[in-house]
Amino acid sequence: MVKASLYKKTGEDAVCLVCERTCRISPNLYGVCGNYRNVGGELFHAGYGILSAIESRPIEIKPFFHYWPNSTALTFSGYGCNFYCPWCQNSHISFSKPPIGAKPTPPETLVEMALRNRDEGLCASFNEPATLFDYLLDVFELGSKRGLYGTLVTNGYFTERAIEMLIGAGADGFSIDIKGCPSARGALTTIDHLKVFRNARKILDLGGHVEMVYLVVTGYNDSRECAEWILEKHLEYLGPETPIHINRYYPANYWKEPPTPLSKLLEFREIALKMGIEYVYIGNVGYPDLEDTKCPKCGKTLIRRRSYRVTYYKLDGESCPRCGYGIKLRGEIS
Image (cartoon, rainbow, N blue to C red; front, side, top):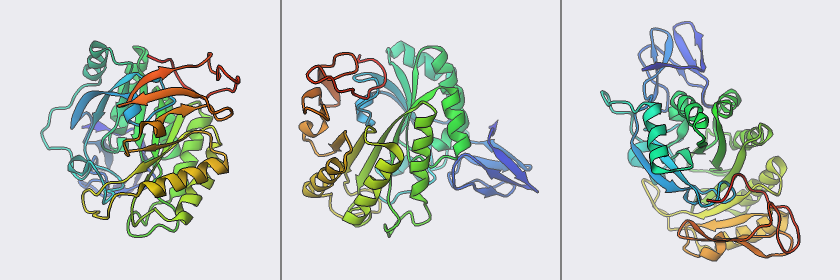
């Protein structure tokens, strides 16, 4: 175990300050995510380097559509979560604690693997990266020194101090799931979804890149009221140029409602575009045209994607070659 870098002592208890749950952990117990343990009044990262998966994956699959297009990231995950969504596609790891006695993967090993694979970056994904916070600091710092970008696929429920530390360590790409809204019922009732937008805004202010993902879950956050709240907050906090991915849900884990109708996804996309959000994508449906990047001003197709790879790319620097409109992108195309 590695001593945690972000907590405070309260008597014999330790208060974890990695995520907004701020678990108050008594001696010999763990926080909600199952990765941080109080040992003698001090907080330790019991899940440090205990990984459940390591593989190279296209950056577009995260999804990132405006970040280092067509690159690959060495993607890794741990165990546990701080949300426990009942529809989780990766519940086999997200609902599990790090195996006792498992051998940790040193940050140096992960970085060297990415370089051997000729990946352009690193990505914490599959389960919630907050469970690997102290490990991420070491991995991203080492990776940035070797020329690798650092990214996270996250629910965005970090504390503001944790975000500052992640960006300071070299993380600059955040694919953030916005799970719900104040009117959503049946799951995640203790989550303050507004804090997710607050954090996304902070990342932008610190120079990071953000793409939001709205998984439209049947029977939970699929009302028009909820969609309008999410899209309004997206505009208010992040502005029209921050991409949003409106994705289809499929039954998984404990949630057995039918998949999101395509008509509803298209309806929410139309609302987002009318509100002024410039880059609105629909994912998990198998219609590639809905994942193409078009110029918000003249409509020209600028980036075409098929099977999570870029098959067509036409930009004049950072502008549309037809009308000259500026296009928000981070990094170079591979």
